[in-house]
Image (tube, rainbow, N blue to C red; front, top):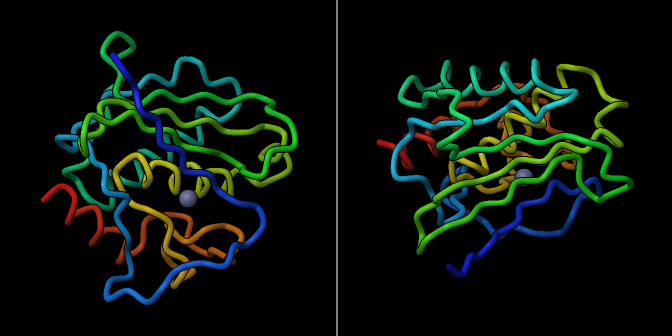
Length: 171
Ligand SMILES: [Zn+2]
């Protein structure tokens, strides 16, 4: 089977982008068929606690989003490690069929994240899980988790517009 991978990287350096939109959230164009996610965090070496807090933050923000550990039928795989001086803190890769995401993976770079607070790392992972859901970067409001770190994000949990986006994806 041919697989198409789409990569969402968190830039450390702010990029020029974004035209005006009528919403304070942006969709990637890809989403899972429902918001009951299976995940495998068994490979995490460093950021298991931050991932747990991040997934719970999404559930607390919108209860329809649920996370169940399943290392045999895994929709969302989590990895961390020292990937060197990359231009991202963490990155999300999705594997879609058409516009439906079949599975996704989030990789967290210890090289950068080891220098950050646990709270900041939790925010980084929550942002990446937003990409997993189907939300894209939107740098118009620093109080939203989908604002990129390089644009001065202050949110550590999903904000009001992030939640609107999640509800639009999984009504
Ligand atoms: Zn991003």
